[in-house]
Image 1 (spheres, helix red, strand yellow):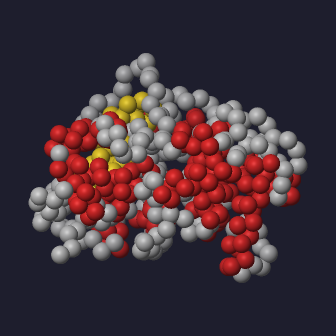
Image 2: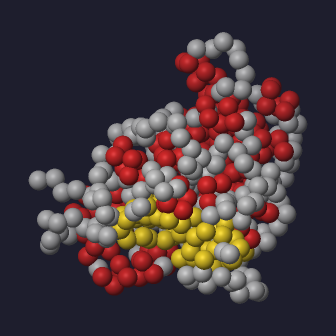
Image 3: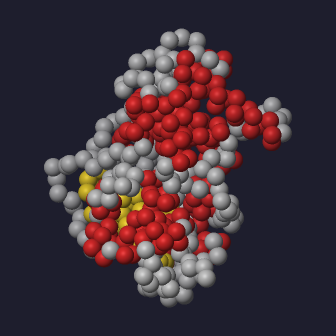
Length: 220
Length: 204
């Protein structure tokens, strides 16, 4: 979706503010949100792409004004409601009003912690060979789905070069909506800063994105 | 929270969030979805075990062991997996090398993708709009915000983490560190130097 989360190239957000000796969490509730997201993701089977889409779907004004872990909290509540694991009446009441569903992997317990501390593998074998090879000129397609995508707006319609072939991976655009893993070849595509931002841009800048094959077409 | 208006001041807004988060944890616990002690264990791991020291050890090893460096640049997940004493690393990690000709910077314009196992949880600035919006368009300006100025001719290569690949910058080993042990070298490898927004520096 063309949401406010797709921030690459936007102006007006100001300087990067670095906090010296930043703590891991600023408030204890932030750590609880992070842990709940990890735990429910792991045992309720919320995949990373649907979790991202739930955060991207936060209304733009809220997205821009909420802190990072507030966004995670709002996204988690939405995912729990959408999956009918928690009711809106329970969120309002602040406690459980009926017994819970059975999670695909059961309750999240201490024995499950080690599993969430290592990232899963997103590699999946596909039967077809990659359509592009190193050095190929490709154009990022002009795609504007209202659903989840990982093709940022700032590269759409621009021509870049295939620099790496990263194997075949779960395709977020379908996985986010539980339409299957639908694995696709994944490429690192590099663009010159001037191709993206015009002749006034810094000529020494190159920018790459990792793009799935359906995002790309042969450059004309 | 900003999705309702009770006329709260900033302080009670925070406590409102606190209350809502606590209520959600109560609901998930009462429903038997999570054991709060398991949540404690996740928090403890991120507060005590997972942090940029892991990445710094990898960089220091690459600076002192050319075979490891070559393996790291070839397949970072595989190379780091051979170092049993580090935390486990997930798949799809890519190490990118800074050289006098090229400086690498990592960003995630769409959200906050970051090599957690190597660097811990990302800092607030990495996840915030200024860094996410500007890095792909004006990376030298962003580096200036960090006090980093590079030669005008150096190529700036920005890697936008738009998929499940994760990136770790292998910074250049600073002059004046000849003969240093891996442990001593690891001390000067900062988190920001592995994101590309800082440089390792030797303080004399």
